[in-house]
Amino acid sequence: MAITMRAYPNLRHLAYLVALAEHRHFGKAAEASAVTQSTLSAGIRELETMLGIQVAERTKRSVILTPIGHVLAEKAQALLRSVDDMLDIATEAAAPFSGTIALGTIPTIGPYLLPRIIPALRKRFPELRFALREDKTGALLDRLAHGRLDLVLIAFPYETEGLETMMLFDDAYRFACAASHPLARAPRIGLDQLIGEPLMLLERDHCLHSHALPLLEAAAVAEAAFSATSLPTLIAMVAEGMGATLLPDLAITGGMAGGSDIAIRPISGEANRRSVGLAWRRQSGRAQTFMDIGDFLHSWAKAEIQPWRSNGEVRS
Image (cartoon, rainbow, N blue to C red; front, side):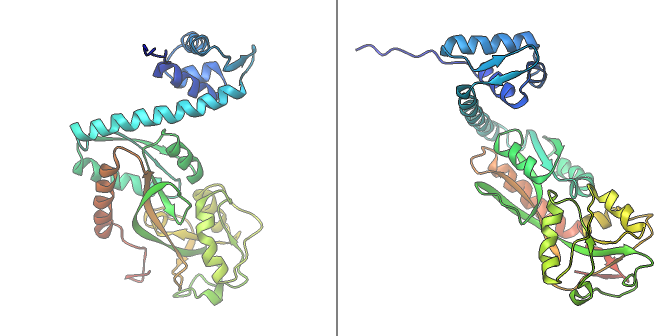
């Protein structure tokens, strides 16, 4: 009996479908795919003709994927990720430590660490290039899971089921307050001194907020009635005497508090730290490269990442 080969959609058509599912707009999907809108629209129609079904409902103002369109877009996305992994395996075998790595990081790490580690990485891995993206942890992990990022640099603990992770270094929290605050001159802040002290934090969808919760719980600390959207805003509020907060070493040693009329004091206890580390997809074809990058950064951090100092001594 003769075997009949099925007609398969090409990867370009599948990429158009994934882009359309993400952007829900032909123009934006075309821009993300680096093609014209007419090219993308024609590609979607070719896909529909080949499959014999409608994947999208079109109006003059919007596009809606059909239920089967959503299912196929998810399958297409998984298939494209597998193809990317296959190409990564080939790249890794042919020329290790070359090509481009799409690296994501969070706003409470990126501005204070990337300017320092990127030059070191370029020197150690001169054939590697890094395409950088900054976003909140949840959004980065979503992009990582869907193949739009290769590697993320985030703070832990954080739920990363299905991912490989590597811790690089710890990042301690410090108490920050206005210079006029009663605790501004304390040599070290004990957890008992924080009882009842309302602390301003970043909004709840920032991981810096969730990482501070163990310390707040250990000290029976209450959160202030308001929060900030970014560290610069938070520091400005503290400097104006609106309350106290917790700042990580990276932000402090990165100059975030420089020029502000705030006092920074060390905190006693083991709950006052987060861990900075890497995460990548477990099935990634470049896993060995990511582990080698992690090993290098771990060694680099031991020599280069110094905790904030008070009175000439390292506080941890």
